[in-house]
Every structure is written in structure tokens, then in C-alpha cells.
Length: 178
Image (cartoon, rainbow, N blue to C red; front, side):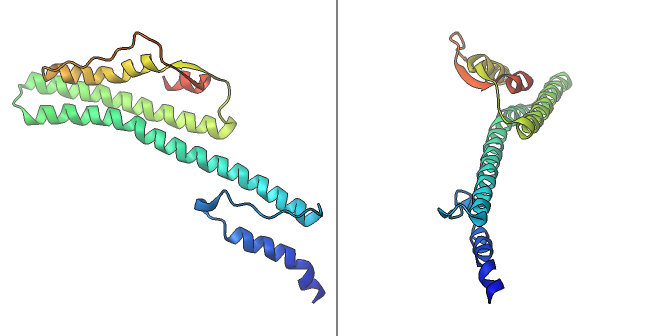
């Protein structure tokens, strides 16, 4: 009876932790005012839960950013391939389209490598040294393949990048990604 009574606080911690899942990472253990060993253990577990929640949030954010970053170049590839397949073309036109798609695939591969590097850097050190990045210039770079596709269809795509659109971003990670 004495042993089970002394282990009750540990059983309570185990029960509370059993209710915490990936969708409830904001939950924390109750910490009493006594400051005894059990309360210190609860506090240490809460701090660990905060770190896990922050890592989980970064992972979710990275996954969403990765999907967004991949959507544009894949759409450009698909558009170019559909255009080539759906209209009669000479062997030279097909070769030109394939060369362009190969170039875009290489850029996509570089983008994926950079995203992996960013994920590794974030895992190792977190995001530090935030600094300004010109998103307007970055948008112009991203829009270039679409401008070429639009031109082939007799359309014009204009991206106005005259004014800098600055955002705070990890300087080292931004340099690697760009």
C-alpha cells in the first residue's frame, strides 16, 4: 500500500502523458506549488513538450512551404509538356521542348536539394541571423519559365519587380536556397 501510494504521482504523470498526441501537443502536465521532485519532473517534461511542439510546428511549416515551392516548377513542366503533346510539332520543336523540360527538371532537382539543406540546417541550429530578402527579385526568377511558356502561346506575362519587396529570412538559408 505504501509503495503504491508513493508511485501514484508517477502513475498520474504516465496517465497525463498518455492523453497527449500530435494534435494536442499544446497540453501540459499540471505542476503543483510544492516544488518537490515530482513537480520538477513535471516541469522538465513540460519543457520537453514545448521543444517537441516547436519542432513539430517547424516540420509542418516546412512541409507546407515545400509543397508550395514545388507546385510552381512542376506546373511549368506540365504546361510545357502538354503544349508539346497537344499540338503538331516538328522534330526540332520537340527537341527544343525536351531540352527546356530537361533544364527545368535540373532546376527542380536543385530546388529539392536546397530544401533538404534548409531542413538539415533548421534541424541542426534552428533559424538564426534573419535578414532582408528581396522577394520581388525572387518572384521574377520564378516567373521566368512561365513568361517563356506564355510567349509561346502568344500571351504576355508581366511581373513588375521594380520595387523591392523585402521580407525577413534566414540569411544563410536564403543564400543557399537562391
